[in-house]
Image (cartoon, rainbow, N blue to C red; front, side, top):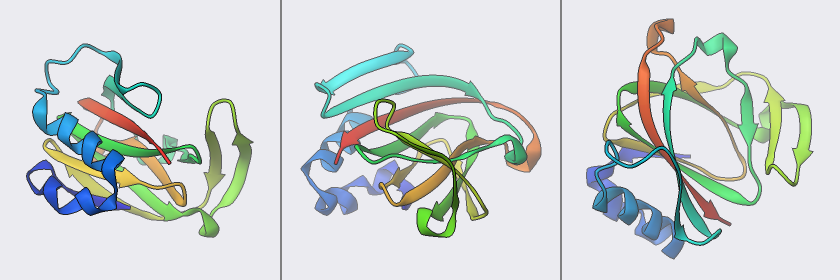
Length: 150
């Protein structure tokens, strides 16, 4: 898991060409003005999911992880907390669904504050809970999740 501000995105190009492309997309676009929905960047290899969400209390979140895609989650407006735990420390709640590319887990981990202008990168071994409310106070968040094929 990586978390940082978009201003520091150049530091992460060494993670691979696709991650670099994802971060460049976020830098080159005013993500507060993108239309909600799926935006192809490089076909199914890299695409963005633009979302307007309301954060939820932490105890309503569910740990998830993906195998086919890395998540680059960028908060364009608002603030949320994102949970992180290595999946080896979690218990499988719902086995991996290859079609939907996710498994669900139970357990505990750490949470990090992700305000507007910041991103988090979750790799296949990174269980994560996105969309948690800061201090359990729901708020509106504009988020862009760039899916990067492994």
